[in-house]
Image (cartoon, rainbow, N blue to C red; front, side):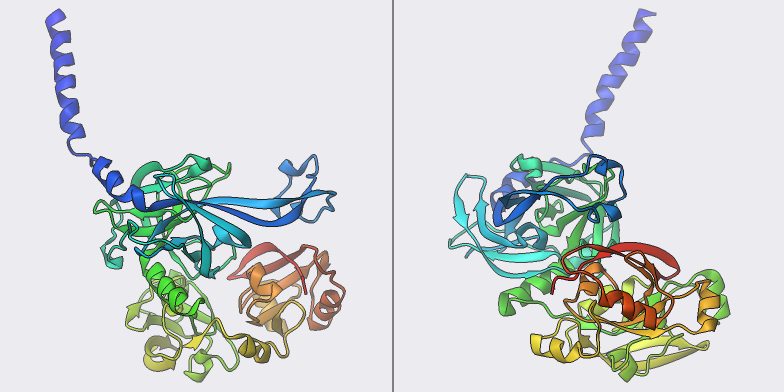
Length: 456
């Protein structure tokens, strides 16, 4: 019996080293990359402190801001995040939400040296911001080849979660091209999903591959508790490369814009539309005077390739269009009534200048929407009692900030049900300013609640 126990124990202890031999050693990678990672502290404008309702923790998020809250003394707002150096002369990349509304930005390196930073440019749609400090010969990080990242690959993150400076966590890539709406409810980023432990304070920090090159910028987590549960999302370098170049040269970002409402295609819908398979982006609406309308794209078309890239589902289309330089003519492959067609479309600009926005916003309402009526047949097919369809959303408007897009069907504003355009116009005419208001709408058959707030 003793010999048998000894034999089993001996085999176990001998097996452990061979298992660990297959795991990567991150020590050299951390030593190489950590000097270029920074901690970012910001100080913003003073804001009144809110006294939270006693039962708020049990309320749905959508209703929390609807309660009138007593305000205490004003205190400066503070945020904390991470970032990393991308050039020796002091350019630093981080998240937009880390430095949004910041009046003072302090950058701290691993050697405890500190610098004041200024914002070169910030882009809320990609959640990226480019900072600049006055320094030279800084350690830098390099972007990886965008096409080199694979699902299952080892990745590493360095950041300051909860203020714990230069914490290192590791995991694998869980998915690529994940569509997760950002804090601004936009969908122009094909996120990299990982199981790397990311927490508040990691935002803006780098995600590395085993070569020490940056494959993503940590941006969001999915969590019911506020802490890491193994679902974290990073902005891929394909987006970061484009955004950094534009912010550095122009201080702002222009994106491609097509002007369509889209949805996914299931097997039954593919059969009904005489498609070879359930893939592509089904065009549900085309905005007036949009690049899509000018390029002969029509509702009912199914886009399967755009600018030589395959469209497997509807989420792929905005990812691709957003990275295209406005004004570029691209080839579009689509199916119309079961027949394959090839078109040429000149991509427009999503983010326009202030002058263009003023012209573009003519005719929009207080929320920044241009709308149209739903006919009786549409209401019956959608099983709705009433509502209005969004055909256009003005840039920078309350509606855009709330996340509405063309094709959404608005059925409730505040506590008023929306049956038609006349009722909708009466409701929005009386909306107060500076107060979050609930708005309910349908998108691709799914009911969505958000809050919308008029500030101007």
